Amino acid sequence: MSRRVKDYFEQVSSQWDTLRNSFYTDEVREAILNAVKVGPLDTVLDAGAGTGYLTEAAAKRARSVIALDFSKSMTDQARGKITRPNVEFKLGNVERIPLADSSVDVVIGSMIHHCPRPHVAIRDMVRVMKPGGRTALSDMQQHSFEWLRADHADLWLGFDMEEVSQMLVEAGLDSIRVETLDSFCSSSKDGKAVQVPLFLASATKKYSAATVYDS
Ligand SMILES: C[S@@+](CC[C@H](N)C(=O)[O-])C[C@H]1O[C@@H](n2cnc3c(N)ncnc32)[C@H](O)[C@@H]1O
Figure 1 (cartoon, rainbow, N blue to C red):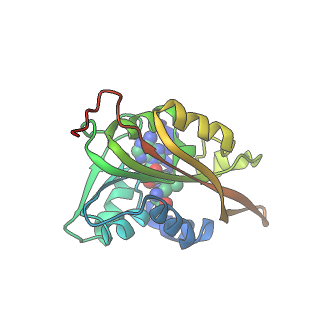
Figure 2: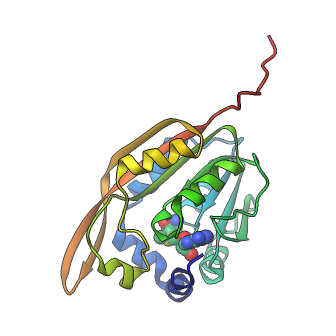
């Protein structure tokens, strides 16, 4: 876990919705939810749920949503807004998810550039997915805006889409798609606006070789 990342989100929680609206549009959320086709029987994990941007929309479609975040103040903001009974809030690290193996149908998120070890986070997301479970993660494509590290606690300057694909393969996923989204992450420094292309990665968890099907 990165203390700097956690401190940043503890501090910006009350302004996060405004900040996020300046970063990206609701099309990103729709793309994530559509990629995993959230349905009424699904238990969904929102990894790095923050103030509940994905959680709230997923909860309208799913049986239940677990909103996981390591920031208490981001989680408190989400709790203050989302009163649906099918949402459970959990404090914890996405690199060590406090859930049992094979316990959720779907994992969604848009935060791996804040993780010290994104491949570890993805591996743990896959651990908690049921065989056949679906995931959709969005994030920034590789860029060179170093100042995002200091200004917004970014640990990774986006990701090369090939490397994302490789991380998903190594985590044991199947049906992998990593595509450019039409949406961007917008930000600005010293009055200069920049737009970073986003990707959407989606995949399903393999059934293990030991799975036996009745004929
Ligand atoms: C960029 S925000 C995204 C929040 C939300 N998904 C959204 O789109 O508004 C990243 C969130 O991930 C959380 N986060 C970052 N690293 C984390 C980690 N290692 N474990 C759990 N949460 C983490 C932060 O506290 C923050 O709420």
